[in-house]
Image (cartoon, rainbow, N blue to C red):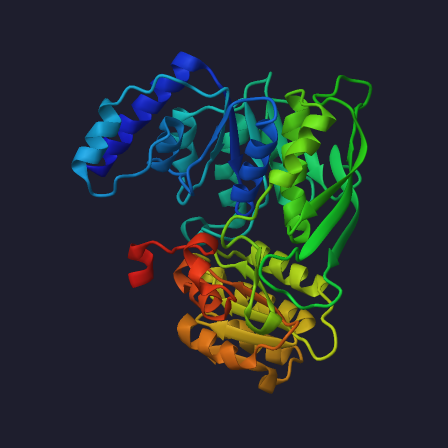
Length: 438
């Protein structure tokens, strides 16, 4: 039944795209897909009408739903029939779609639904590697999106990830790179973060600003460059945290310059960039603390990136940097090794470490082995227990990173220590009745 539904939806979505011929931008990678997709969609809206994926609709069922602008009716048969029989009249000029895979062959099915004219690959990490023999095989599957872009399109690659750059050989379209490397076509320099000097974080306040200079190359070995030239400009991101946030914007600028947006159009949309719930979102915590809510999901690369963000904060007086980390799922044979790597990094940047879940005990043990005092760590089986423990431990000015895979349910920790729990449905992930009961 599911396969039949997927086929019918795919046919409907494909027919819709074939009729209207919009610009299709496909975003893939192990981490950073959603923030990059949102950055692209937000900036391009300065010039085009834009539709982007609904929530995390990025598989064989979700992709056509995003194209058709429909939400899943769940188990409601009549709801599905209504979608299949509906007549969508108006199309957007640009569709920014997320392509997610779990198994070999998944990308073939997605590309068959919506072949992109522009493809963006963010970063590779051993997430979902449970169903692949290696990260390299995972990358080969994702690279099918790059290969699908025609020669008059564009492939945008993260220059900071060598694995991603190496997959450029699959592309027949021109390649543009982005990142913090000076060799990237779109690159950032002079990265700086500013936080509140009093380190007392209250609801309604601005918590931080990120500043970077962005440079766009306008020549390549004497040949035509697929981007418009751009003067070096200073951009400021309010309440955005970490180099990952900047990286998403760099990818969006690469796409925007290819589609001939002006610098003023790009800059006009930056204030509209908002943190998605659970994706490194700064939230005021109890007692004047700050919660770095990264509870949507976790992979080794995103865990390391989140810990790097935590390390950028320098708490005053007796305030602490606290990491509350749940397990990372779908790592297969690499589970212990990847959790231990996170633990060793946590020992370098955290004053306190709390882990949640069975697999996460590898994080704590590795941190202790790396020199973190055992009395500065704690381990819990469930997120609610960790949240209650934090209630008593958090002090004014503490910076608390909370992160873990979806199945770790780390948003329950955040809900326990956020300053405005009545805003949980607005600020946190997985707040539907179904998730709250689980």
